[in-house]
Length: 59
Image 1 (cartoon, rainbow, N blue to C red):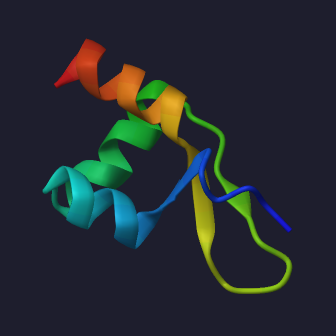
Image 2 (image 1 turned 90 degrees about the horizontal axis):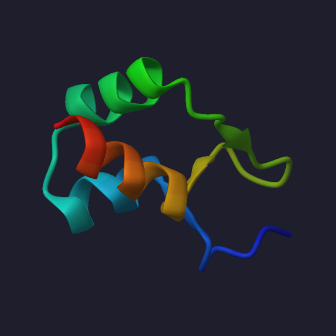
């Protein structure tokens, strides 16, 4: 089980940060962020710290 306090799901990141799905995917791709898949659900997770740093450095 993942500690969801440290990770954003794709849906959560888009709604909380008010960005589009296309923008979310481009941030991950351009910054080569690791995406973690949950074995229990179909959710994909990205570390909050890494994602927010990437947003601040590259919007």
